[in-house]
Image (cartoon, rainbow, N blue to C red; front, side, top):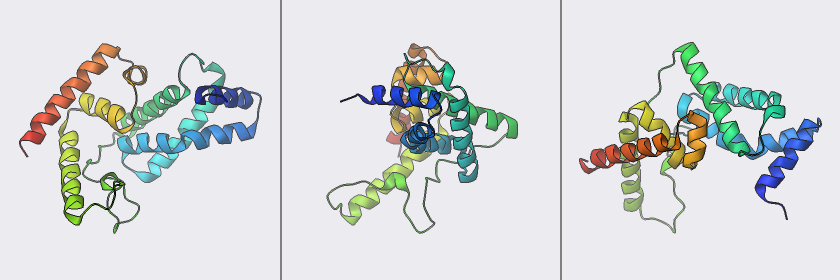
Length: 192
């Protein structure tokens, strides 16, 4: 049985030979993660959809340049992240508050506050929801250099090395920023 990395490399080889199904499979494998990353930065569904499509188009055009020594996901995240930075610079977008988590509709609770647990009590649910709001507010108040590494590390669950590649920073700098961000968050959350 092939590892995930080997399966992805085979899909890339097929895509390079013009196999449309391989392109579709690659996109299906990474669509949700790329969407989530872009949405966390852009906070606008329409622009996120456009940027996701643009990310995959750029990635597929640049596929011959992909270096298989690196993780495909990291390479794709970097393209997505750079797209976000480009659009922010071009349109001078203001970041929307992290107080507005992803919702499917207005009557639904934020996706970030939903947990799969063995029937939590209403009190537990309320406490968790309040805690999430406090955490989101604290993250929102972080300087951007700390906020971006915290989101990539804890929301996208990327390794230090992957974050380093995406942000073009030394691994030591990434670790230092994450450490500093956690310290700021701990202090902010203690006061609540």
